[in-house]
Image (cartoon, rainbow, N blue to C red; front, side, top):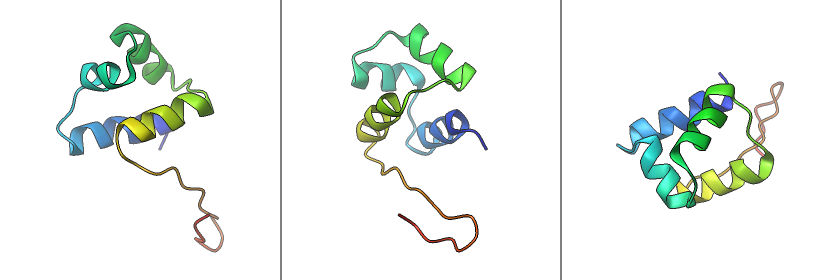
Length: 68
């Protein structure tokens, strides 16, 4: 699953819309929608989104399932 799909799933779970997230990030709704539709997010954007959604970013080893 792409990262943008995970972000959209998180928004649904939190009963939020992309416009709500854009407001938290103080960014344009259209620009955020385009980034999510293209799944073209920088790491800095991902950090900002995770922070706005009160979520952590995790790196998971596919072989051992260890979380870093």
